[in-house]
Amino acid sequence: MRRKRTIYFNDARHYYMFIYEPPMRMRDAWAPIDEIGGTAVDTFVYGVGRGDGLFYPSEKGLRFGADLEKMEIAPYWRVWENMQSLIDRGLDPLTVLIDRAHDKGLDFFASLRMGDCPGLDAKFSLEGGGRGYVHEEMRDHQFGVLEELATRYATEGVELDFAATPGGGSYWFAADEVEEHTPLMTDYIRRISQMVRQRPGQPGQVGARIYPTEELNLKTGLDVRAWLEEGLVDYVVPMTYLYTVLDSNMPLDWIVEAAHNNDASVYPMLQPFYTDEERFRYNLEAAGPAMMRAAAANNWARGADGHYTWFLKWPLGDAERNTLSELGDRDVVFEGDKHFFLRRKTENEQDIDAYLPLPLTQEEAGKRFQLPFYIADDPTNPRVQTVTLRLAISDLVGADKLDIRLNGAALDDESCTRSGILSIEPYMGQWLDYDLQKVRPRQGDNVLEITLVGRPTNIASDLVVESLEVVIRYGMFPTHVD
Picture 1 (tube, rainbow, N blue to C red):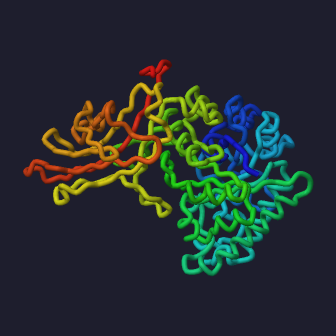
Picture 2 (picture 1 turned 180 degrees about the vertical axis):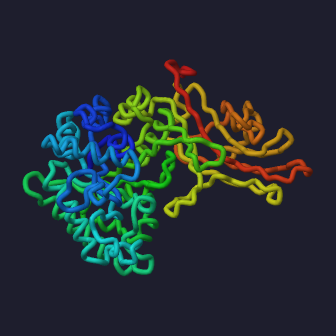
Picture 3 (picture 1 turned 90 degrees about the vertical axis):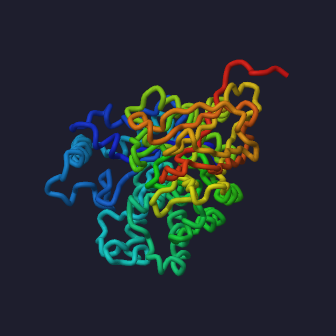
């Protein structure tokens, strides 16, 4: 059954067991729950493990650190000692979190990386020379852990994390065996679903982290459409693990249609960053509230049932808690300031279509390039105070001639201000900020067209469009009265 949810995820490590000094105090053990208390978050998802171990005293898999004589680094030592300090007091670290979540009125889902099997002989994995989920041993091992999480613990259900691969685990099938064994994976999901739904007591639910496009899922052996048609999963979370920059233009149409036709929910991942360290000359920068609103509004406009996020700037401050509160209220999101921006191409093998960076070479001068984007807001809303179109273009000089059009209309008559693209090296490029008064984007699909008309012949370098952003600001009073 479809349900509106606001979900927050904690991976058990970065902002939890890696951080606190043992022995773990109860206030520290409860911290992942307490830090989101009082916001609109109604569902907490906990990443229970990674390839080298599970972060609870599992009877089916390998507990993190149980196979080590010495911990490699201090954070790993903290994980072991923090868990053990609770166990020595007769407390199960996972039960402590589950009980705290329920005390706060939150649903609790245990998320398991499906490409990791801590405790199973590595020879079965693709990386260890095996055939992955073709081996019954690998399927049974993961099933045992999921069964433990669904029946031994008072979770509302389990989340099957397929999207952590690559980067957080091995694939389940070799590339040349995907087509043959895709039905095997569907049968496996059927087995898991039956177990969770038919557990003793209250039936559990099954969620799945998947890739953003149907093609990417099928490429690895995940027939998500079949899972939905058969009612095997209650919700899906489209995302990629290695790309943690917010994407306000995620392709949701296919998954929303497939899920809603079968009464399942879609919770797109709102990644936490505006820029990452992989972008040349840029540092890691968290996405601000206006950026999160923009992505959330777009997702809602495309049919999402709620939102899922994680890794917000920690410790969670007023801005982060405010974001988690706003995400639960569609009206607040739609009436707030927005900061839309386009995603960039990456080397991630699970990458999806992206149009930036866009080279404007002198050899292709006169060629018109298109940058499509979507905006959920209605710029004709009288409360909209300003609409600013921002373009970052590297190596731009004042003598360059550009033709820039929004939905076919030239921006020549719009006011444009320029600033340096980087604070330390402002000469490396320029921001062009257009104060859109006459030509504004429309609600829904838009296209920005850009053409290099001319460039000084004694400059060898080419231009590159690095960023396209749209900032919409609202005011208390209307800008015009009909």
